[in-house]
Length: 556
Image (tube, rainbow, N blue to C red; front, top):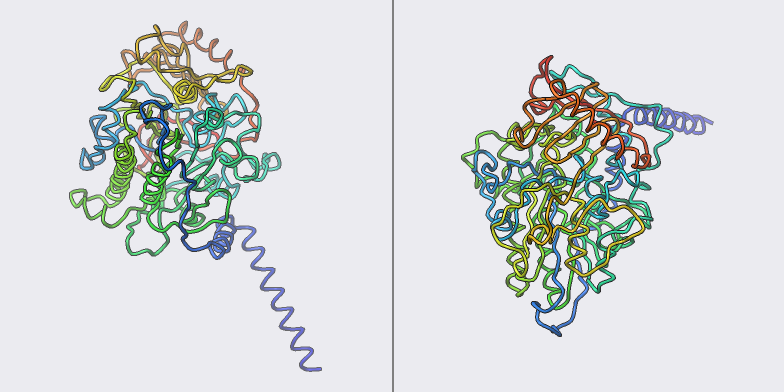
């Protein structure tokens, strides 16, 4: 009897403890994520080699006589001022970027190059489809509700404006792993498959996780990388890494808790990469080039660098002793690694005799992020990732194709990420779809001087109630929170210093009418924005705000 009572007591205590733990976990989004991340990491397989599909052992025709190979290299949150080509470079040029710069020197610089969006996923959707992501409802970046709730309840020190979390919209948000490119969309990879290209994707996808939405399902023969929006660069506690954590940034707090260090090959089980993520992706890209050297291939190399969390190899960090600020030094070391691995790709193309007839495009998904707390990454432009000021959408954008395009040319008319789709299709001889609106154009005849005028009369961006129109040299920004209009003449004021909305109301009204017309053509978002976050335009997070700071609220 005593034993029975003791067993009942132990069981009751266990229920109480478990119940308390459940309540504690449920009431703490970050704890929920920590538990899920721990369970997930236990299931990860150790590092394993990837066996890439091999092309022909010998080439039927010379590389110069085949259709051009296509390599699209995408950085993640790279600041305009992070490259020495743009006249700056991290820490005042302390980190040369010779390999990335060489794409510009040996090819064409799109001086007025614009991202598809000011945040990750919509920009990537625009690259893949040649369409504004708002045309098919991919308006926001998919994010875990626990993340949105954490950011929505966190006010950084010294910041006067609180974020807004829309709990009432939670019921309308599908599970994050079910959000992805609509099946009706056609990717550039699918077009090139139809032209006999072997198509490969490496790195960050962020356009769907479930069957029907992964890279294999939308046009890529092979892929190696991760489906979610970010990833650690190396395993926690690895002695070869140096970290920088920003306690003023809720995004950083979430990522350090939530992110794995893992990759997947062709929808198989996730496993740990063998070494630092940027180097790992660069090394595997070289192997892809070697496997496909005797057939036309399309490679989409989507680095997650230099997106947070800020993690650098100690060897790269130690190579930059002249940078005294720890956070800046870690970030600079990440840029060093990114450039090194772009160099591996360029050198592999050359070593395999493919560099002359390969179309290489380098760009960033959006501008540098304010939440890493570094003030100069987007100079000379105002704004950041998650704003439509130039710092958020005016990005490095270089195209090299030695067999066809001029070297060392600057093309000064506005071009955008949506143009990659039609430009690559034209280079490969693929017809573009005629059953839908394509917002991008083939840039080749404009670069070559065979087409006159501008590629675009207008460019358009939208995130919730924040909408922007670029019409010629005029740029109109319309915001609901704050209720404000900005009008800039980029020809005379490319860094958006002087708001002309009050002094030129007729021009503002004219452009607002054009903006409203394009806006009316866009689709309703597939899911609503749960979060609206305040972002100061002229200083990064971690710097005390002033009452008269200009700001926007970014919906996501």
